Amino acid sequence: MKNKVVLIILFILPIVTYLIFASAKHNSLFLPTLSENNTEIPNDWTTLSGEKVLLKDKISVVGFTGLDMIAFKANMFNLNQKIYNKYYGFEDFQIVMFAPDGKQDEIQKIVSEIDRITEDMKGWKFVFAKPEAIQSFYDSYKLTNNLQEDLGTPNVIILDKNINHRGRKGKNKKGVDEYRDSYNSASAADLHNEMTDDVKIILREYRLALKKNKRKDDFKDNIVNKVEQSSQTK
Image (cartoon, rainbow, N blue to C red; front, side, top):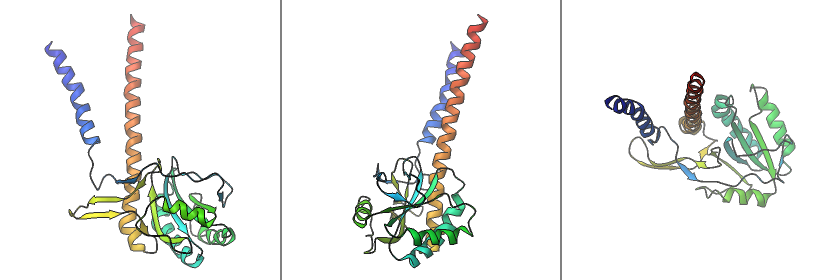
């Protein structure tokens, strides 16, 4: 009986301890959810490459180009250098830009220019739609800042694989209330000091989840193997 109690303690205690730490939330380890299950990209919206672009099952940085291609080019360069070049190697990471119909040629030219200084541009996605459709899509996120009259904004947002909008909400490390639902791509400092950390947190969440699931699968496989081995020896 005593041996059984010891075995139960040795087996259960590590699991309970793990669950406690796994469920712990900290503002430097997890990025809060600001809104859940947001709208997927409509099927009738076109893309620059002709491929179907989806937000589901991807970690996405989402932005809106507007009509001012000079301003957008500068913002895209900042995002490319400060964010994309650091994380494009992560298979499920993408940057999705929504642009008004008619801007395909100008955006293709910008992409070709930035492609000269970037190893791989496949994570950049461009989606085109009518002005009123873009406005409605933007409004659905209920962001602090409004979309400009030309349907553009330097601000970009982070979406997780469930199309949940992620950002900062609550007290920061200094104990001060903080709310951030977007990041200013016109500011290299904003991208470097704030957004880089937040994208890193999201990617780390999924890496930890993958490792956790793998440990569960390994544990289950070990149990199955032992049961099968035991049955074969009988």
